[in-house]
Length: 155
Length: 231
Image (tube, rainbow over all chains, first blue to last red; front, side, top):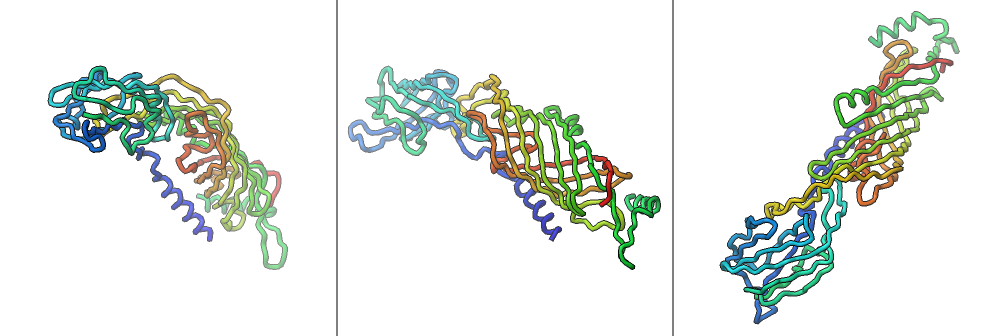
């Protein structure tokens, strides 16, 4: 009986010591912006952008996975150190700037994941449309829903 | 060594160690009283681990043949550092109160223990978030933007924690009335006051608080029995 208690306690200790809270399993912690590209004439159907290259004003490096790809949806991060992110979306070498303004809040998630950034009151704008014809919506409350597109861009 | 000592002990005090009750039944009595000591694992941990300081006084009192009431009182300060995420320091005082049941049948008048115990624990402490870095890791995009660390210490004062603790341990009388004890404990948090927009990651006396609100403890104590009766 006493031995059983002892064995039980030790095994509980060993098992619980391997709890998963050492690793942040949530990826990513901070939400990203999801943009979907649609056909300008047939607005219900998605349309791929050919030879898409994405970089930003804050970081002139090209995002590796968007370097000359053909895609109808992109998932991109916002700059956590500023209240504005200006992206350069280049299609066949023609650049269309797209800027996002927002507020930043930091929200605690967990020991291993730490703080996530909550982007709120987002405003989208395309200073000069080159290959964009239109986009919607112009404003958005937050990026909490990470399953559907936040912005629809027509081209 | 314990055996050698036990023989000596038996020879030294044969008269009052043996009480004849019936013809062939001997009841061996052992010293009883308040046993006081310190946890020596904490100063050792403090000297090895620069982000920790701690001190704990332990005491128990035998109320029945195999039953002791026990208490621990201490102070701890520890900095929890989560890689690339947060760095926080908790410091404060705690008390643990409960009982130990000795499951070991001693030989003759030996006074050793293999015990199981229960404690109720309470801690009162402050926790300072020293620094943190917002988690914007985004492997898909090759961590395109990196967040700047925020070093703006925020202290949450007067936090508290209540918990239950189950322990197993051994105690051995190494010299007359001097005891060395090891024990392990499994702790379950009953309630904790969390800081705003952060979490209590460590509570003095409880140790690291795991995501499931459980924790583990280890004690290595040396204590002295102040005998004033025999039981």
